[in-house]
Length: 232
Image (cartoon, rainbow, N blue to C red; front, side, top):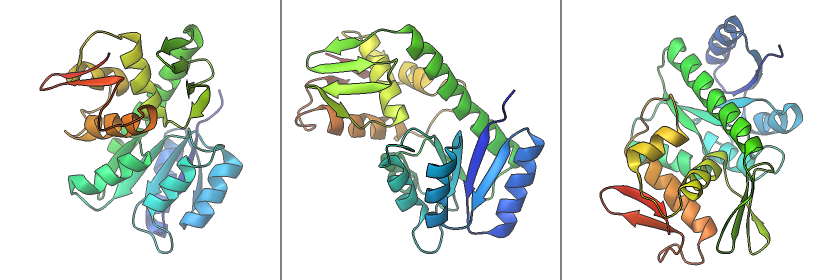
């Protein structure tokens, strides 16, 4: 069985050594870079299964690295877990808006990090398996193709993150029906710790910005106040 490959991007050598040792003990292959520029090059060249990315680094920080990885067609679908010493929810929201899949706050336990990595990888594998079984979903001028992992609006391909694609797919499969916040979180982040309060709202807002003509007056995704969301 082929080992999953982790790309670790962190400027602190002892953190790199700690994570590398423990990830290898848990059956992963680990490659690493000590700064953002090196990490971006490794992501494109190595195409890892997942990226562990530190926020605070000299030169370009983790937020900028995340942004560049998401804007590169070769690396845009690689899941990213960000490491941060910041505890404020607003700092995590920034990372999520840029396309991060999860956050781990320093100092962290190795078991927690391993669990989060495995949870994100399970979600990716589950999504891939489900998408092979589904046909194209058409809603208005939007086409969702699970097999190609592609969304088009008026024939133009939209650049969605993995989480945005999953969220739109779940809503589209239940179009016309209300999905509560709890149900959506369970579908998009199955088997994972409950995301913080604003995580779902951030992804909905980013998704609206990409699929709506005017995200201030959404046509597709309707908010049912106090309950959840639905595709009209």
